[in-house]
Image (cartoon, rainbow, N blue to C red):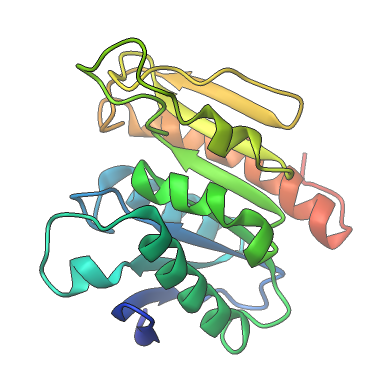
Amino acid sequence: MTILTVDTPHGPATAHLHPADGPQAALVLGHGAAGGIAARDLVAVTAVAREQGLTVALVEQPYLVAGRRSAPRPPQLDAAWLAVVDRLRAAELEGLALVAGGRSLGARVACRTAAATGAVAVLCLAFPLRPPRRSKDTPSRLDELDAVSVPTLVVQGDRDPFGMPPGGPRRTVVEVPGDHSLRKDLDAVAAAVRAWLPGVVAGAVGISAPG
């Protein structure tokens, strides 16, 4: 693993790079609002992607690198994420099909920036559809998912207090046991990604998916 420090408009971010031998694609993942890249679902998905020959980059936003626990507003998050992805695509991930994703807040960032990053697919772990303990009139974030024009996988706990996003023409939603942490059944999380990832990568690079 290589840890890269990347300058962004909002301070340094880090990318923890797990390179594969002769990859055709890369998976770039962001973390949740108060958690880091050591979240169990991110670790499980990283292992799946590496098994399938993808290079994986786990990105730490500048506020987390600086030791702050409170996430900034979406424009700042998105700008920092784009700076990291642009840096990686100019060097370590050059020429690779890009699958963008993350858990919770990181999933939202990946959705909002999917077009700008040129992602061929988006992976959302525990997408926070609607903040819990708020009025039913609180707007949902479904528009962020609906705006993604490439294949999308949402892996969601069946007891997630943030709600369950609906499926769609390009969006697959897999319910797994557990809550927003996705810790209860990491095997189910890994299985969902393992079943989906080869197809979207194959479609992007023009090869036959295994199986």
